[in-house]
Image (cartoon, rainbow, N blue to C red; front, side, top):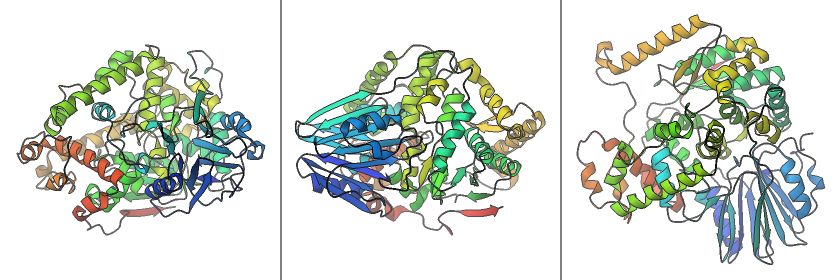
Length: 587
């Protein structure tokens, strides 16, 4: 039975807890830095500290307190959580992306429980002076973690428990955190372990499990909007929702700079086949020079590269009280970023070494000793992460899910969308993962497992091909449609490479972001190479990478110092007729 979220305690948008000196003032500051949309602020003093959150639900002024960040589903009635021991027992029974928080006033004990994969963002800072928990790193000021920045440069995101801020760690997945404030004692244990390789997946009803989660989210009372693309995950969600008779619509964001919007065309065809109303929007071409991109940078916590990233455009177009997005099925049913050959092949494919162009860009930008600490720290972290896992495809799948999927916005919508709306993510349940994590690589290869699911769910879903990771994938039934889309995509690639042949006179790609420029050097930075500014005045072809890296470095610092608008706001291009781009509504 789904929890009745409509009654207190309700879901909180962002969390801030601090035990130690100046707790109330610290919590107020952390909440203010996370409050992008002016949500109501709730804060209460507790023994030795303070607890606060953003959202509409109230919090009792005394006694026990219970709340969630994220959206728990499929759990028992919260009325049975009466003390810390009950919280430790009950919170792990919920599914979905969430962090459950319970303050036991009688025992002066705080219990915090994270979801089974740790997808709902939650960070911890533990010092001799106390304990801090926040939903986003920008809630705090701090120094950069150079080893994490080495991972950012090498693979695009931190790995393990690190964040880009020194001393601020991601709370582990499936954690039961118990903090005794009177004794200043912190204990963390896990309630869910990654399943070992088995044959348990063969007889499991994956569609039934996903439908149960769909109904769990539907209990929140809003049908929501599907973020529909030409890929596998959103198509699966759309047909699951149609089968469950949940009256959703779809948002399609045109991807004009990839094969002339093959992605959007495929999404439109699927929406029509499913008889789903949809809205298609065309983001402005100068998006990465716009105030909307600055808002995205703040919402994303600047935890991963985002300049030129399509997901940033998608996030800017969301205008719905809830969105459905395929967080879990994608990495459970397809070997995303998992090449045949295990860890060796993955490391060759994904990890950029010291001779790569991005590390050469880093060497131009940062001081030599800084680059060395970044690279060596990342190497040590990577070895530790890889060595703790089985050295086979099963272990590699776990590595990708626990690192890339948790930390990249394109993989984990909870990193950004929670600042904009509620995110419904079916598949994030313990029972589902116990079986999905054991699907062998060979079964998932070439989208074979997905095709079997679609054939069982609704064969109409296989009427048009898929676009996944920039590749056109056959649906398995209509090869003619795949060939037609392939020819069209080839035409657009040729056209973009030879614009003068088609009368454009210049390359049709979007112009360089207006945020790349000398203003990025306007404040002191003890980590940067003193000669970096002079080097960037040259016309070298690889300077664009240096500028991009500098932008992300500076933006991260300015967001965490609360200075982004002051430093970059004057450089925005504000000529967009509509902040959300042009749109067409089709019913």
